[in-house]
Structure formats: C-alpha cells, structure tokens
Length: 495
Image (cartoon, rainbow, N blue to C red; front, side):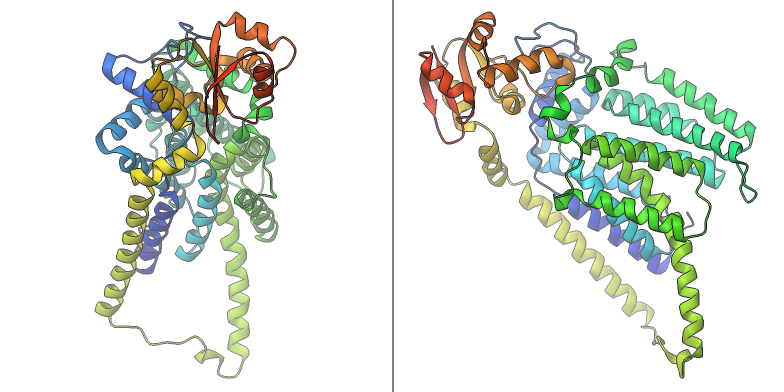
C-alpha cells in the first residue's frame, strides 16, 4: 500500500482508533483463569507447564501446553497492571490484527475504512482475554508478509518461519498459519493451471522459494517445549466430538443472533463485488475465501481468520465496481445543467483543517481510553464475575475447607483453578486434555444418568459445586447428599 497522506492518513488513524474502541472490553473469559494460573506456575518455576497439575482426572498426564508463552504474557500483565493491563493487551492485539488487514486493502481511504470496520465487527466475536486474540494478530502478520511477496514483489519470506516459531509457542492456532500457506501455494498453482489470458501467475522460481520457506516454517513450529507433540494439537482438539455439542464457540453460527450476522454481510458483499467488478478472481483469494469461509461456517470461533482474509479480497473487487459506477455518475453529472458546479466547495485553511483533524483524533482516542479504563475497573469486573461465576461459593469453600475431592461445573473449572488452587477440579476448559472420555463422563454425571453414583465413587468425590438447575441436584438430594452452601448461582453438596 502506498504511503498514506492527508485525508487517507486521517481515515486510517480514525479507523484504527475506532477498532481499539470496539476492542476495549471487560477482560473476562472462563478460560482466562486457568491460563493465568498456568502462567503463574511457569513464571514461578521458570519452566513451561507440560503435565497436568490442576485436575485429579488427568493428574500427571502429559499436557501439550501450546499457549505457555502467552500464559506468561497474560499473567505478567495481570500481576503488573491488573484488569486494566489485561484490557490493554486484548485491545492492542485485536487492533494490530486489523492494522495488518488495512495495509492489504485497495481503493480510497473511505472504502478501506468501511471494509476494515466490517471485518472488525466480524472478528470481534473472538476478541477475548485469552491467547486466541494473540493468534489472530500472528495470522494477520503472516498474511501481510505473503501479501507483500505475492502482490508487491517485496520479499520478506524469512519472517515466515520466525512468525510460525513464535506463534507455535503462543497458541495452537498456528495451524491456521499452515492453512494460509497451503491456500497461498495452492492458489498460485491454480493460477498456473487456469492459464487466464490476463493473468500473471507467480513465476515458478518465486513459487518454489515460497514453498521452501513454508517447509522451513513447518520445521520451525517444532522449536518449542512440546517438540513433536506440537503437531498433535489440531487432532487432539478437533477430534473431541463434545466440542460442537457442548461448547458454543465450536458450534456453527446462529444467524438469528445479530452479533453473528457480519459474517453474512461479508459473504454477500464478496459475492456481489466479485460478480459485478468484472475483475478476475485470483486463485489465492478464491482458496482463502473457500477454505476459511468453510471453517467459519463449521465453527464460529473461526470468524476471525475468515474476516482477516476476506476483507482484502472484498476491497480488491469492491473498488473496481464502485469506481466504474462513480465514473458513470460523473459523466451523467456533466450532462446536467450547472452540473460542473455540483459538489464544489471552498477548502478550509490548512491550519484550521489540521486543528479540526487533531481534535477529532484526540476526542476518539480519549473516548477509547476512557471506555477501556471504565470497563476494567475492579468493581465492574467483579460484578460481572459474580454474575457468571460461583464467587461466593468459592469463598465459602476457601473459608470452611470442606474435605474431599471436588466435582465441578465445566464452565466453572477455569475459575476454580484460580480461586481454589488447593482443590483440583474434575474438568475445565482444556478439552484437548480431557477428550470425550472425561467430558462425556462429566455430562453423564450432571444429567444423573444411570451409574452416576458409581462414577462419583470411582473418582472418590465427596464435594460437589454445581448449578442449582442441573438434573444432578435433585438426584443428590434423593441419594442423601447434604447441602453445605447454596445461593441463586450455585449449590455445594457434601457427604
């Protein structure tokens, strides 16, 4: 992208500030807490946590902790600046990912700003206080390096293995980087195979160079504490059947929810722009939209990657379409009486316009940072935390120290790892560690299916913290378990 000046520079700054404003949110996520505890353990011991110490169902089992470095980063931010630092971290990485997308856009500043905001609305679904938001920034950085090589003729491919090496220590989403390299190589091969008359596919020498750097990136992924086990991550996670049945982010989109509809807007916008722009669809763009669009339709957690690859494609076709319409409109305007006077205006003095621009930028920046400060205030965060987590029940357990192993709600496992470290959990958000075996057993117990008492006895459970509306609650009362504590959020049973 050419150097930004004048109005385009202003639009770029305003767009990025608007994205930061959107990303400034309360840093609460059910998985945040076990990430913080793992980061603390790594911080204090000086080595990554590679076996489970947080549960009794998988105690001592090897754990492919692909997010160990991000956990250290999150814990360091939290210990240094509390919720505010976590909020800044999330907003910063979300904004960085969008900046890389903006730099790949085509067309005037206003068009790029519009498409960027649309992409941000879609990606915002996965902006949360966990390593996944860092993974999106790494994905966008890799996409930008490939864009420079493919479309600008700028060779920075040495960054590809560097990005993948760092990424594989930050989050298991590095697999998305492998997919992006695959679609880029496959798309260029498709360009050669189709042999469009107006096409200039990447020369074979450059394509071979891209392949070699991509292969080196695959080796670089192994440079982390998990070693060869790193490549097990996608199979361990996707292979868990309970994901789509039980965890909302792994389910397909629900377009009755307005917050999820930006994906439809992006998809329909792509169909319209590609169909009306009269511009040939590049093979790389085609594979990116198909592969990552398919992933987004399968699981809404993939909204982010699809938004990041589809936005530049949309701009590349939307601008030729709109510019053609604008030219026809300009020709029509010249035929109208006094048409040459329409839309004319006097420019403001340079000092005045710069002052107004700076005031607008300062105002939006101020609003963004005020919002971030407000939504990360401990009183507000604690109120949200109490609304979704068993804070009072955990405090009661910490104060009274009832004996026995704790059976817990799946959604609360991460929080209990942080709030009650002396009580190992039955299950938490690490689905790749527990698999269908433990998650399925947990579901059978909370549903009070046949044999639930034998399964609790097998795990030597004497203490249960769960939601009051679970079928297990009535079964516990009938089986002689005693209510030790209860509020509108949770109930604690013991025996």
